[in-house]
Structures are given as structure tokens and as C-alpha cells.
Image (cartoon, rainbow, N blue to C red; front, side, top):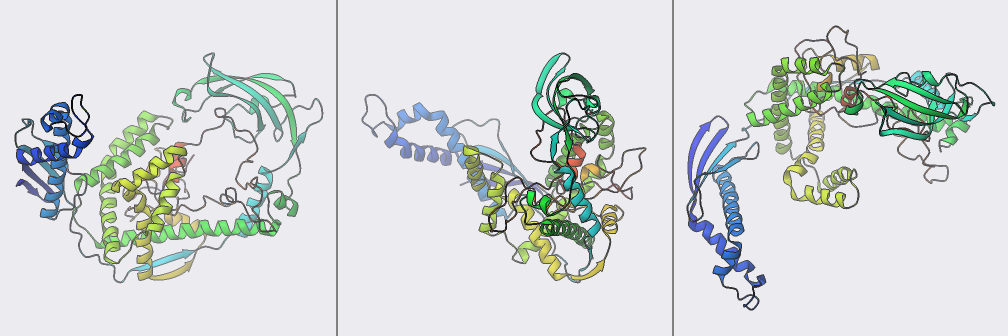
Length: 549
């Protein structure tokens, strides 16, 4: 029988010394020997007739390790059940240094328990829902952009010099320090001069080129370029101009819509309106959720496990440090992050407290993620893998409770939030998009919480620069903007069949070749601005976040 002695009991921290009798471990060894004996083969013995002492001699170390590990695991589980403890994180288990086979095992177990969350106070919640109508003018502007980005190209007259607005088709080979680099070459790449798609200086040096020309293009990679080895490096590209093309007239009409696989212009316009409305709905929900979290934070205050806070704090800092590495002056950015680390720790504590509170509210009100919903989550996550890796991922999630919990958490949280929305007294107020976005950007009085829509990497404007409003990322991962969804989901044709896969209403025409390296990089902080649930920082009463570059 395992002997248990409590050695620490301070707040949520508990520690115990477990003494596992040697007899228990030996029994486990004997049980394993009996289990494996029928399969053991040894010269001079019939199958299944190898003496136990010889099996122990052959596999003694492995048998001892497995028996000890099993005894410790069972001892920890028994401890948690007897003490009625819910560990916040994986318990720390340490075997005594003086342990040796045949002796009792002394095991130190350190646990930080989840707190007993006070009965949540959710009565009398009042929320305002800002509703925004779709701007018809913005839809028409989007139509014009789509037409521009899906325009057709025809060969220019012989000998024509390329100018801004023309397209040149090129082969290129890039070198840095006279040596080629990965992804630095390409063939038949279409480049629209003046579009700004490529790194600074590349397009400009092709202005005036004719079909058949060969040019040396010299550029410097941006300091925030994704490839570490290329940041800030001077590069030279040997470019062969294979063709010069001119753009056809970009008409917004039924023929244009049909070229995208749709029935006509009105269907295209309605798709854009629907997607714009969905985006606005996501912003409205983010606004309501933030106000809900602020209200819950104001009503509840209780101790939270330091280990959970430390883990959340480390997640926040890891993201910030990653973003800093892509800044123009990484050292300065890192120094600023470290100076504000106390604020980030406060953010981590608030996030943990609100997460525990939402979990308690959900449990008390029967909120759950169904097995069907869980299977959908696993399938969506597994889609990023291929072949056998996909099967291994699915098996891993099914066998590891922590992995499954991480997948389940965002959906569970949204369902709890929806439950609270249904309980609250909600009043609607018409607002403009600018007003809604400005309210979302406001830092004053906001307590950050899980999925509130703030981006930790954007929480503070750069010194010496005026902060600009930035569209926050909604915590519901809906379309990133008008056109995003149409570009990925085939529309229905008049006969009810999927439209051609060429339908693409995004900002770039899909059929244009895209080289890996001359393309301008997307700033890392812009990408992070879309990750609404990664964490956020709240410096007290500071300006709105800086605009993503």
C-alpha cells in the first residue's frame, strides 16, 4: 500500500511524498513476466517454458523500468482521486536519487490545483450590439478591383517598350554574393509593372524593356524579409524578358462575372455583399464578446494557478519575440518588449482567469462540444497533413487528451459566449463601420481575455510614430474580406454544377506565376494581426495599435 505524506499546502500549491513499497514494484515485474512468458523464445527451452528467473535476467532492466513507471503513474492518479485535486498543469514527479531496485521508491509529487471558481455571476448582463449596413459604394469599388486584378493580357506590338501598367513575362536567376540561393530562380513569371508586388526596385528596373532584352536587376531584400539568410542582403537578378503584354479593358459586366464561373454580374455583386455583411457581423460579434468579457472580468476576482499564468505568459512573449525578429530594428523591439513584460504578465493572468470562468459557466449550464463537432475539428486540423502523417495526427489527437482539449477549446469557448449572449439583455444600435472599428481599437478600460480580438503584437505603437487605426481580426475566423470566400469555394453554375475552379475574387490573379523570392514579403505583424486568439497586451491608457505595415 502506498504511503502518502503531504509536504506543502500553500494556496493552490500542494506537494506530497509518496512511498511505493518494493513489494508492489516486484509484483508488477512478476505480472509482466507471466504475461510475456508464452512468447519468449530461448535456445534449449520449448516455447513458453523459459523459467521466470531467466526472463528476468534477459529483460530485467526494462521490466524494472516499466514496473516502476506504472507504479508511479498509478500512485499519482490515486493521489489525485484521494485528495480530490484537479491539477492545473501536468504534476511534477521526481524519483528519489537514492532509489535502487529492491528498495521502496520515494516519489516527490508537486501539484498546482485548479481553484474552486466562485459561482459565476451572470445575472443582469446588458450588452450593446452595433449593427452596420453594407456600403454599396465599397462593393462597387471591390468589383472594380476584381476586374483590374482579373484583366486579360495580349501581346504588345513588336518592339514596344514596357511601361507601368504593362506586363512583362520573364525568366530570372538571382544571386547573393555571386552565389544562387533557394527559390531565387523562375521561368515565365508575369510581372505587372507598377503593381508593387515585388521587392522594391525590381519592377522599376524593367520599365523600358523590350521582348528579348536581358537585364541585370540589382535590389536589396527588405530587413523584414521572411528568409533570415536574405534579410537586408544585396542581390542581383539576371532577367530575360520573353514578352511584353498590354492589359485589355477591365469591364465590370455580365461577361466578366461569367468568366469567373458565375451566372452574371448581379450574382457576383450579391456574393460580395454577402461576404461584406459576414465580415461586419464578425466585427459586431467581436465587439459584443469584448464587452461581455470586460463585464465578466469586472464581476469576478479569484486566485489562478501560477503555472497556467507562466505558460500563458511564455506563449505571449514567444509570439512577441518572433514578431520582433522581423522588425527593422529587432534589438530595439526586443528591449521594448522586455521593458513591458510586467504588463504582459498581467494580461496572461487575466486571460487565465477568464478562461477558467468561461469553463465553469459552460460546465454549470450543460454546454458541450458534441462528438460530431469534435470529429469535424479533427478533420479540419488534419487537412494540413498528407498521407500517413494525417492518419498519425488523427490517432495522436484521439489518444492524447491534452491535444484534443486544445482543439476543442476555441469552439467550446464560442458556445459558452453564445450561451451568455442568449441570457443577456441585448440592445441594437446602428453604427458606421468606422465607428465600430474605432471602438474595437480603443484600449482604454478594456480588460483582455480569451479571443477578445486584440493582437498582442500590435498592442503598442512604435515610438515616435502616430498610431493609426487598424482593423482588428475577428475571433470568428470568417472571411478576411470581400472576395476571400469566393476565391476558395466554387460557385454554383446555372445547371447546379460547380463552377470552374478558376473562380478567384482575391486581390491577385491566380494564373500568374509566383516566384518564391523576388516577391515582396508580408510583414510578420500583419500576419499576426489575423491571429486574434494568440494573446494580447494592454498597456494602461495608451494609443490605439499601430497599423500593420
